[in-house]
Image 1 (cartoon, rainbow, N blue to C red):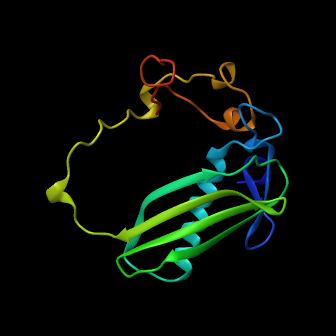
Image 2: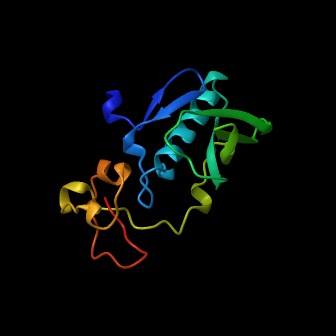
Length: 164
């Protein structure tokens, strides 16, 4: 993917510059959190891969937005908070303009067969080939929204919806 078609440009090992495709839906000078959440997961996976196979996978992520993220370069660092062989807690911190702006806590746990306790799964979403596209910029603005291809499943309701 070219820099013009990507959400971020890597400047070095831990620093990134957002592109206009990260533009928020509420304020043109702010980033939308969704592309950054994806970058945080990518950074955590790179960090874990660099340590070698350990049989664990991400099981829970919580993200605290501590302030507005503009379009200036930012740093993204991942570090262990609670190491372990079967469960661990990592923290990813996005720092911009000399201050933490986003803090994500990432639990990883050992992968094991959960078939005995499986249940309550949601119905699978339809594939995009069965759905008509919708133009989301009529509802929201911003570079991130323009970068999406949205195909709603059923009628959208205020505050709720599903898309393939």
